[in-house]
Image (cartoon, rainbow, N blue to C red; front, side):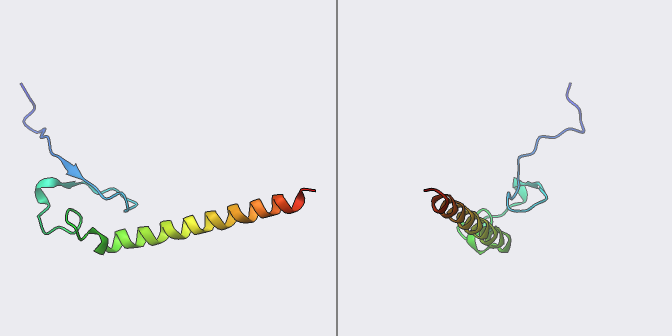
Length: 75
């Protein structure tokens, strides 16, 4: 006998948002920004993409500075 209070629901969440909020898939519509081809228009997606780009740029800058310092310090 199964518990009458338990239900199985398929959910989705956005990895870009710092706090996971599970959204049941039956609540998403075909016009949903997240599920459609327009996900690039999502403000959270764009902000996360920008933040990731800045972090990559900072990492590349630090790496190139570190490599240049090592080459300059070698005889």
